Image (cartoon, rainbow over all chains, first blue to last red; front, side, top):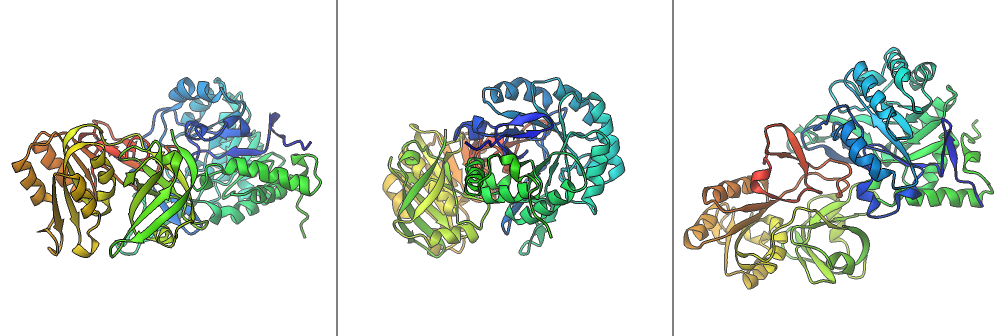
Length: 303
Length: 253
């Protein structure tokens, strides 16, 4: 019997596989296909204090082995989430990660305060959304602003605090250390990579927002590298994400240092991906004689 | 309610310069599909996104797709042969065409004709106007001819039927006959023109829309379409549509 559970900031997940924020809605759409209780945790669509309409379409462009999105944090707002979505998600035996964003430090503080008094398991601080004019990635690309924001949020946050990092930085370790020093309980990475696609016939960008965030298998090796770097410079649990599409990918990310992995936009290709990834990790552990999923975390034997 | 089903390609035939006609054995999806709904098809391992294609016809066990060879995904579909498997999510979409009504004018442009055939079969006393770029790309005309009371064709280059857009033939049929509904599917400019005509005649108009899409089920919120309201709000083609009442949404260029 292999123990698939892992622990993130003192919370036990039944297995190390999550769904990444923004790719799974609030779980309702995929609950039609399988039992959400199979998942280690669900990171819900990014939330803001007030409802947000998001960016004008087109919001998506396909690229080799990936896609670029500029949804722009469309969401019904934290109040609607608490009233309508938490009761639904609580029907399942899985952990809930509330992904929160704001335009200003006080926005982040106020939504964290509201979210952390609701029935959720983690708060994931989104300081890495590339698709909003204010807030989002603007906070996540400088060590000083990350440190300041995390410190302010920490004062009101009563749940384990995950800080979601942007890959659009020169030195990811500098950012990771700033989050750790200001009280983050865990880190998640990577958010999408800022990218652009141009239609050569119309000579216009495909996205109305001109630029957006790249995700999918194309970004996987970058994610693995950053997770490995971060794991080696901070002493925090890391949730790895970015192009995970198979159990083998998840194992690779865990070897690099991820304590858990999230499946993101690959879900759009195959909605059963999280289930297949869980099975794939289990198969790997069995084949290689590991008793616990946690045995492979950071187990890469580097040169 | 939608499912994932591994369907089997029964036939996949080139029917015009760029259009293909594929029949898929997919009993669970075909068993509950409604006119206007679509399927989201996985097109190989290299493309992250599935391809959303409207259901053209459905007999309870099989569904039929008439699609255009437009890019990497649909090009992969053209290479499928009888017996090949197809990974399908469907039937998708909650906004569908009304069924069981009479005196419907169907207006289709290009492969926009496809979902209207299914709608024609589930309604009574339908007439249709179909627009194509050229006669070489005119498809489904025989199918519509057999289920519609009137059928008019328009081609941009005048090689078949009326020369120009669908507007003239649509106006012609509206002058001669009384219609209770107009259903339209096709390019945005056509949908806009048909919506305006429908409003002028005070006829309820349902349009099937397209937008770049990812999940197909309402989770990712990529396929946003502007809603008519005081504030700037968006509906989503995959979950709220693809069929909307013309007055509900703003058709942007």
